[in-house]
Amino acid sequence: MRAFKGRFGIDYQMTPKDDALVYDALIFRSGKLSALAEVRVKRQKAPYPFLLMNTHKIRDLVKESERFGLPILFIIEVRELYSGRVEHVWMKLNPEMIPTWYKKVCGRKDRGDPFDVNEACFIPRNQFNIWQPLDNSSSML
Image (cartoon, rainbow, N blue to C red):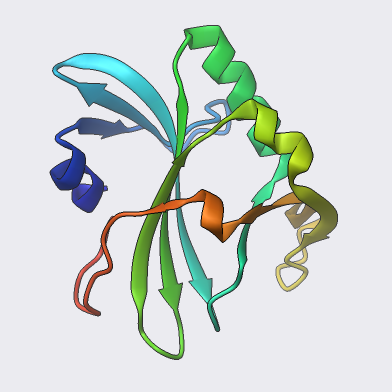
């Protein structure tokens, strides 16, 4: 989030880790609440042409966006495990794009949590904006 703050001149407040809250951060511009954000760190073995996000989570974020009259931002740090490359990407969620994304039931099965397997949206990587490739020592969060 620090990299995003510096690049776009915004302030942010991370929300408490609470199951009742759908979004991860509040975004402020000039002291005014301007957006809600979903913040992720993705670790990938290779660069993939898409990023996965839980379909139900996206729908819940759209509801919160409508409730508060604020846009939703996806802010993601992508770490490639073998190359060490770090990339920060972001997008403003356009609910009209959701039906165009490929969806499939998938998820982690290594932790024994049946709730980790859900329908996910495969969001094309080219729909995200790249803002700051960083060296290996830097971190967004």
